[in-house]
Image (cartoon, rainbow, N blue to C red; front, top):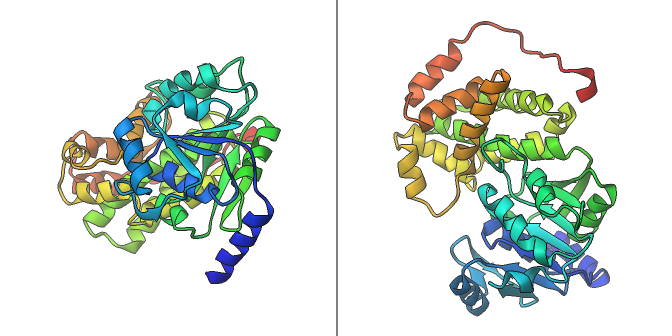
Length: 357
């Protein structure tokens, strides 16, 4: 590990960017990304919605609520003034809960620089219609910039903030935007890959939270490793089936933003969705879980949205359906298991349209 950190330090001394980067959202992930960027950038602004939060972070230089024990470098400016954060920024990263992304994008538009890169670092769907986050961002900043990038992968904030090595994917329909994000975020401990399949990257990041809830339930009733492996594998099939239906490339789901993020979210103690699932398996209701945490459990909202879309589009998603039955209190964990195991016999392999490969 010491060799990794030495390479990181050498790399940072050689390549210091003067591009202003604004992080909109001071939760665990937004804070971790700022810390990761701090070595190579001299103009970093972290935006907090609440003035008292900004004042506290400035004073303590530690996000004790979302990322305790990790120091915020002095190079990071912290503000509750959205104009101050966004104005003059060459790259603006939106890192809010998914349901707030559209509103946030609309608010930053008035100060957004022409042709700035806007990065969606949240995971989920934007609204009841199932729009992807990059879609609603593009609508809100139309005429200002088309450089919209989705950043997604197996990246727990706790480990990124601590400087542990990881990899992620930057995806966009605008090649130069992806290249800019790769250049800005890349380091020896934060490896960024490029993709032109923004649909697949976003769907992977959103749908894996549903499967993490399901795996948590499985662990909550102690069904073992074999069951978890089966659920994750069939969960990936559901994710792929849904994404391909809406124009994503199948192969994207076998990469970092699909399988990679699925693995880490379904197995890690850092995963709030997995943790919520464990509590559901142990008998807590969805309402009790949501009211008992300050963290956003994206998987619950996403499951309900995806289930409705799947029914409308006739997409077979049995795991997602049972997760919704658990959330709505219609099935117990044991009943959900019984329903899934008793489904009609079928082949494992599926055929997808050639153009999706």
